[in-house]
Length: 284
Length: 253
Image (cartoon, rainbow over all chains, first blue to last red; front, top):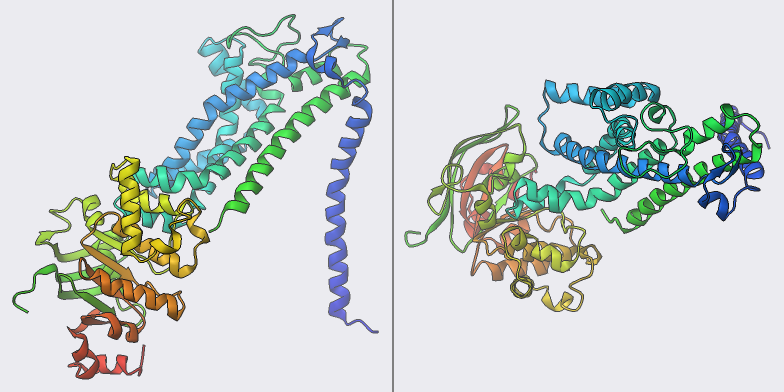
């Protein structure tokens, strides 16, 4: 059988498309293999729930997990309401004018600001100017500012994907604009908003630069007692173990990395499950 | 027609979208408890006219409006509160538009937003509205299932019932049977004939035969102009305007 030129060409194109897909898989798989094979040996219940000992060369990483958890919770508290409210305003209320366009441009640009710049910004504003000191409060606020543009963008997309007909039906039944948003739009946009929020916050949980100057502690002998305390955090602890403390066993570093990656994978899985659950239920 | 009350009076109604005229100085009245059919080809201004009556056009920022529309003798822009107006003037859209919530919640949507929260009262409203839309017997055992599971015809009757739940006085139908099979269409038409005892209905339709079947009077729109409005029988047998005759005999449209 003789193949025409067009068929040969399409076989070549398919081959390169497939090859590219394979290539992006390789680093992902390698990262997981390396971290799991080197880190899983230290992973046990005590590692997750014990305090570090002997200058962090042995013992567990409990305070870093707690610290990261506090930071994620704090980020959500600040970023979620502000993000959703401003997305509702931009998507439902704002008129197409210069101010709106400037705000939109600002959001796009905020999303592109390097995370270390957020760290310096948080240091200047929250730690020094507002006198929060290096604290969970300052770190959460810094991370919140960083994830806001992502949450706003995801929420706007979720709101705008709710069909126009839902709004028209609601108005035609005598509902006000706010009632329409609250009862006919928001419930159907919420899964998308939640998914976007979880993904962005899980990204923030792994960031080192924004928490470097605003909250992260090198080592603390006890757990933080209030939002004005410093805290240890997983990504910064990993950095400390890898570069700042001599003679740390490699297993300990990879074990810490494994916990960090594991937590983020779990968060992303939750987001994927929420999304697929509501996508199956969605019927428009 | 002296003793018949004029429910809606449209005077010199001109509508533009972004400066492009959609309707040019239309004048007509709708009488209480009649079905007024509105026919005409695409872009003739039928739907524009309909959506002006419940001020749904207000949602489009390009929409401009001149003239006067009176409902119960009151100007809809000056003397009606827009939310009260929309409760009094219900609308059924071209495609069935159930919200993706339960049948019960679809029916309760309007009353709830209107401040009705008593479970018992809502149940009464839901049952009564579904009965009036001839849907009760088909759904009474599954009120809490998603409305999206109903067939197209059932969904459209659900939308009629949802409108009835607000106890309107006028119901606007915007090509309500365009996506339905003949049997579902017949059920909707039966429901409309029954509903006109209590309500005033306006039916925009692309199907001239449907207008002939259910309307008491018919208005023919062409390119934003109200060409003719008269008794259904006269429109379909002795139309005054040649363009009307041309449209209903299928010469264009």
